[in-house]
Image (cartoon, rainbow, N blue to C red; front, side, top):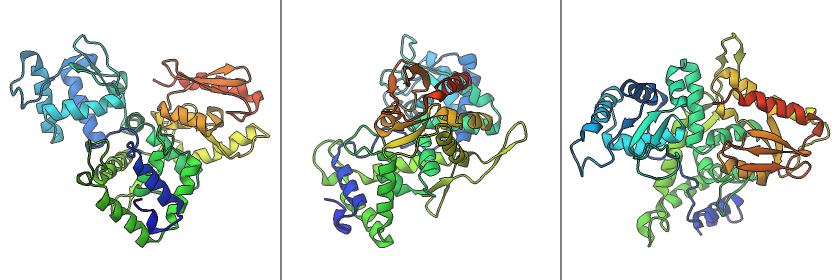
Length: 411
C-alpha cells in the first residue's frame, strides 16, 4: 500500500496502488530524456537534407566517442553534419544525435534508419544502425509552410508517443473534461488501453479523474510527496524492472507535456506547465476559412448518432475516428477527417486493440454487415454489427466511400 491510506475507499488512490505493483507501472515506452521543439527538429532535418540530399543514405558513427575518438573516412559527412547541428541548434554530439535524437525522429517517421546491409529497420525494433536518410514525411515536413509543418509535426509526435495526441484529443473533446493535469495524465490517462494489468478504458479513466478530484488539495499534495519519498530505486532490491522510480515516471510525462506544447491542438498552462487544455487559437485555411479545430468533433459526434438513427449512447462503447485526427497534415485535412462518416462506435475492448496498434487500423473494408479495419501490414480488427460496432447498416457504403477518399490523402 502506497497512497490508499490518505483517503480510504477512494477509487483513484486504490488504482494508483494497484498500478505501482505492476512492473510496467510507467506504461508504454516513449520519448523521455530528450528536450526539443519543432524548430530544432526542422533545423536538424534541413541540415541533414543538405548533407544527404534526395533521401541519400548517410553513414553514421556506430561506436561511442569514448571508445573510438576518431571518425573513420566514411563517417566524415556525419561528423560535419553533427558539427553544423551543434552550431545551429546549440546542442547535440555525434553520440547523442545517433543514440537519442535519431531514435525519436525515426519513431516520428521523419527519417529512416538502416543496418549494415542497407536494409530499412523498423522504428521500434532494435538492431545495429549504420545509415540514416530522410523519409518521405521528413521531406514533406521541411518543405511545408509553417502552419502545415505544425500539423505534420503533431502527426509525427503521435507516432512517437504511441497515440497520446489522439487520446488527449478524445478525452478533452468527448468526455466533458475541461482540462487534464499532469498528475492525472501520469496516473490515469497513460493507463488507457495499455497492455498491462491496470489497463482501463476512457470512461473508467474519467471516473478515476473525478474520484481523484474529490481529494482536497492537501491530500493531493500528500499523494505526490508520498510517492516521491517511497518510489526511489535505492529502496528496492533487484534490477531496474523490480525497482520503482518516481523521478523517471514523472520525467516521462514532463516530456509528453513539453511535446504537447508543440501541437496546434493544445495549450499547456499553469505555473508548472502542468495543465492541458484544448487550444483556443483559431487557424485560417488557404481558402480563407477560419476554423476552431479541436472543438468541432463535438458536433460531428452528435451527427454520428443522428445519421445512425436508433443508435444511442451505450455504456462500454466509444466513438473512434478510423483515420485519426492526429494524422492531419493541414487544417484542411483535419476538417476532412473530422466527420461522422470517418467514425465508428465500437466497444472498449476493440478500441483498446486499435490503440495498442498505435491507431494504424485505418483501412476499412466490408465484412458482411460489419467491417474489417486493417493496417498496412495486414493486421486486422473485426467490427461485428450490434456486438463490437453500433451503427445503421444503411450507412455502410457511405462510410466505405469516405474511408477510400480519406486514405488517398494519407501518406
